[in-house]
Length: 201
Image (cartoon, rainbow, N blue to C red; front, side, top):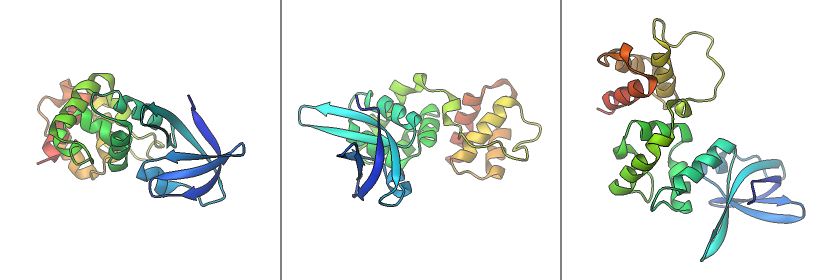
């Protein structure tokens, strides 16, 4: 398997990048996030890749991080989710955002991804929910200078960080957590699921 490609970016296409490495030009299909954040033509680039071989063709898919590549591989392990559909899903959602939606069983929002209907979204949740952890939904950012949630337990703080990474404002995230019944007795994953349900309405 081709695990990564490291070379010079030579061309940007609608859904792929052409990288020159070792005298060869590799066409790597990428999600929109990678396409939009790729360096200028002529600069160095490293992508972590997955090489897909099928009866009707071969494709190389690339991501900035190993975590994104490995999560892509989890997506295509789901029944009925092919590589192109998985790429479309990751073009619609950030990895952390999608993991949070899967853990909270929010099939309605997951359906917004291209090529996913209700049954596919529910199957995605069913097959991946037990393989993911709430920590996977947290951004790998530097610790904030000030505490996000004074008086919160560790589990509540983890849920707060996950909600902030999804784009919710600190105030609304805090209210959703505080209004969760028996929140002190819940773990981070349960708090996150409950808060997301409240914020969805």
